[in-house]
Each structure stands twice: as C-alpha cells, then as structure tokens.
Image 1 (cartoon, rainbow, N blue to C red):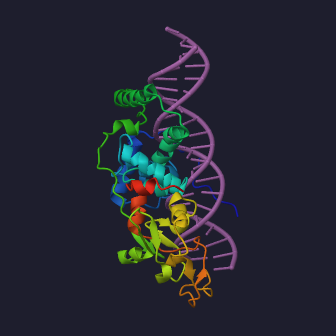
Image 2: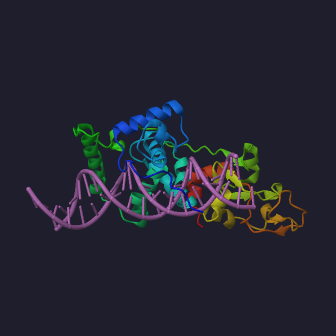
Image 3: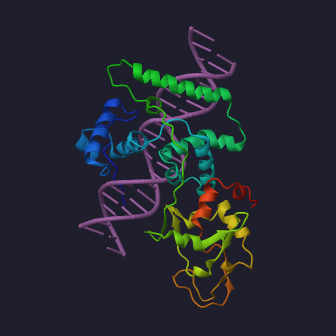
Length: 287
DNA sequence: AATTCTAGCAACCGCGGAGCG
DNA sequence: CCGCTCCGCGGTTGCTAGAAT
C-alpha cells in the first residue's frame, strides 16, 4: 500500500512560523475548533501542511500551554514517569498540565538525560540558556525585517507560574470510567507503603488503565517490581484458579493455583498516585 | 574580532493505529 | 475483511545563539 503524503509539499512554507501565520491559525481554530487538520491550511489560507498546523497549535498556540522553566516538582515527575513508561512522551506530558510532549521530550534529551547520567549541568550553561531566551525574545520583538519575523514562542510569552502538578488519575477499565471503590479492592498498602494484593476479588484478568496508563505499561517499572517483590505466598493474590485462562473474564474454580504476577490485576489508584508523586517510603523501597 | 564548538529547542519526517466506507 | 484517510506519536534534524578558543 502506498501511503499518500500528508500534503503536497510544493508551494508550502517550511521552517519557523511567523506571527502572521500564527494569528491566522489561532483565529481559524478559535472559530472552527480543532480537528480536520488536513483541511485547515486550505480553509484558513495557510501555506503549511496540516501536520505542521497541528504541531504548531498543540505545542505553542493552544491557550492552556504553560510557559517557563520546568519546576523541580515537574522534573521529579518526569523522571519517575519516564522510569515507569519509557519514552512515551505524550503520556508523560499528559500528566504535566500545560506541558507538551515535545517540550518534555526536549527537556529530557537535553537536560535530564545528562543529569541522570551524572553530568551536572554547569551553572554557566543554565544561565546561558536564560540569556539565549532573553536575546531571542528581544530579537523577535525588535525585528524590523519586512518579512514577518519568526516567533521565538517560548521566550515571547510570559512564564506563568502554576501550582505544582496534582495528579488526577482518572481510572478507567476497558474504556469505561471505573468506580474508585474498584481501585481500592485491587490492593492496599501495609504500613510501609507496600502493596498488599487482594486479587481473589479480581478473578479475571483484564487490561486495566489508570487514566491513559495501561497496566501493561507497568511491566518493567519499579512500581511493578516492587509489587512482585512484596508478594508472598501468604498473599491472596497468588492463589487463583487453575482453570482460569488468561484470556477471559470470569475465571474458573478455586483451586489455589499460583499464578505469575505478570498477570494483570487491579491495583490501588491511591498507591499508584503515591508512587508517582510523594511517597518517599515507596520511592526508596529497594527493588 | 573572528571562528569554531556546543547546547537548546522548534519543526520536520515517517510510521503505526484508529476509524470509516 | 480490505483499502484508504487521517491523526498522533516518537525520533531526528537543523537553526540559533552563547561559550570557548
């Protein structure tokens, strides 16, 4: 199958967006809403491909986009989410209100990667970045070229300070919103924050999601390893039916056959939230 | 002062999945 | 079920500007 190009490249602008182009796109989307990216350039009279419009809108023009430096809280969250999810930037960004996947990805590649490798970013380099931003900002506001200057979007916009991210896990199961009680029966924590499974109540495997995070996302995470390390034969979760297959709901008898923990089970939303955010006991749990 | 190096970030590209007829 | 279009994602590229030489 031959994939058609997203748009004809001929006669289209490439590279940095100008303020004029931004205004056109912003106006159009304010009136008509998002979506139908392929038709937007034509309808709005932009010499850009739909993809480019989408990217520009989602990364820079959307009104709820947060500008300014990544806070320490956000950085911690990115690190932990990356440990959990890997390079799934859109999922990570989804947990950072106002941050885009592109921004998170860039921040990771340019800053956090080095930091975690042990290279401390030099102070001079940080100030370098700030200087750059300032200069960019000045340039874009003072540019007198007859061509509309490309925007230095980030530097142009005021950095808004917002309260640190509060994770809201909107749990769903199989696409429907889950009752929070359902999460609670998954497992609970002991005094050390260690999960205790009670999955006898959960007799069927299923793909479980917490927000957009599917349980399979956790398979290589420390969260999951912690769960595994802390399950003993005394825990209910390892006793499940021998006749239950891993594919269908409902399960089978009750013959207490041990099942591997790689099987999907319900988990506590609270526990997950703690793991993602502030629970130092959990964070420091040895794996 | 000029040149080269380096870092940061915006934008592009290609692929895969979802949805629809 | 198949073919097709569109959207969204993640990797990569290229430009810009400060630092270093």
